[in-house]
Length: 465
Ligand SMILES: [Ca+2]
Image (tube, rainbow, N blue to C red):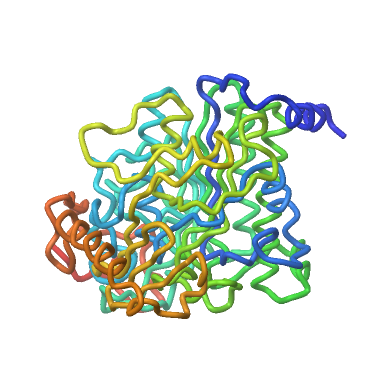
């Protein structure tokens, strides 16, 4: 047992009231398309995610932490602390998510967690999947990250894949360092280990100053890959091997934090960016990625900070990625944006307070692209289609109780009306919506099309204007 491990265990036995360090390190790890019950302890009988299981055992499980239904809006919400529609990214200009060459992206005037922490003196890095715009003004390096390394969108948007906004398929899949492609990604087996090595190096390099590491892996989004060391590890096929590979990555990052003696001084959040696809295990929920049923939105989220968060704690209270910005602001002593509406809440009373702490949300809205689809308040979830579910009794949203609860339906309709008055619906933004970022120059790709395809090197994309 290493010294750092001993120190960690000693700290777990220490009183929780100790003063928080002024600027703790912040690490947010997100696994793409990871389903709720794909990892232990959210799923049962899974022996190949020991690192995530340990993280939960030493930290707090957030059993009801809502993401958004798909990648782009989810990442917009996580980094800005706002409903995606408020920042114009509830969808891409042509598709439910951004594709290469989309003119839209996260408006450079938005304040991300990274920009907020950079102002507080943090070193900041984004390693992995960005998916908030691939035109220059939208890149992580323009949104408060000192450095970026990764694929700037999904790992399936490469050669031969149809681009919904272009006559021609997507360009070759780029691996980007900061603002330039360094190569085409041809072997995704090595990607998770490469991201992990970058993350470990970043932690080592910044051990003496506060840092923010945002590590959104491209796996376990299809096409699926796993390092050869983890192939066959799950005994359940490539998807689960990819889950095991992501778990290995979490273990390496946690080991780096501990080996650098930073465990006491580092707040880690582990999560997924949306519900799992049909290949995932989303039990006990209804629906999958893309849906506004619980299975499309709940993530296996863990918060870890030895000495501050009780080991083995669990909360069923409603939380969301939208809360991360306000929570991290509180933890880091940073100034959250005050010149604009931020939707999220500070979760520190839930994370650090007594087990009786309650959700800060009166009502939480579920948009699916441009449509307002549902609202949750307390135990109730109301879909605008007219269904009402009592999540305390019916977590699988299987039994519509609207007819028996007309007063609850009226209350929930009132919440829906409030959202419509603020954020609107469809192609007409509400008064509370801020403009999406629109790239000014000619649209460009990171890598040109291969001349052998006969396509123009930078085949034009249709312009959403
Ligand atoms: Ca995703």
